[in-house]
Image 1 (cartoon, rainbow, N blue to C red):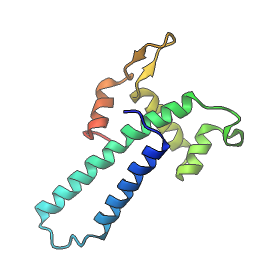
Image 2: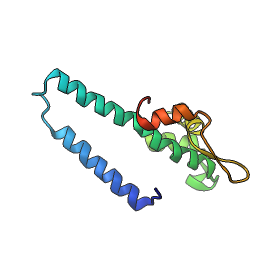
Image 3: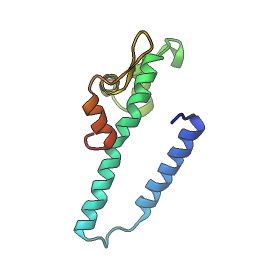
Length: 127
């Protein structure tokens, strides 16, 4: 599905709203079985986030331009923007390269270096 920034903002706004609703719920009356179910569902959602991040990171790395962001290295841009270390930024870029579909020199689509792992991340089975 093709998307643009407006689509991304709308989806992120909906996600923000859903998380706000969950945060505002008084879940103190849930039974432990119900608590575990809520936790399980949240974990699956958290594990799916890298499947969204990885193509963004891959494409950012592929399209990087030394003039963007005042000439800062992509690791530093990501570290500053996400408030993570440069080491973590580098790790995320490396993972994205392994788990994102690629394009050959001739323009042919290629699957990720680790297709089974990429599929499991997309499904939320691993994070």
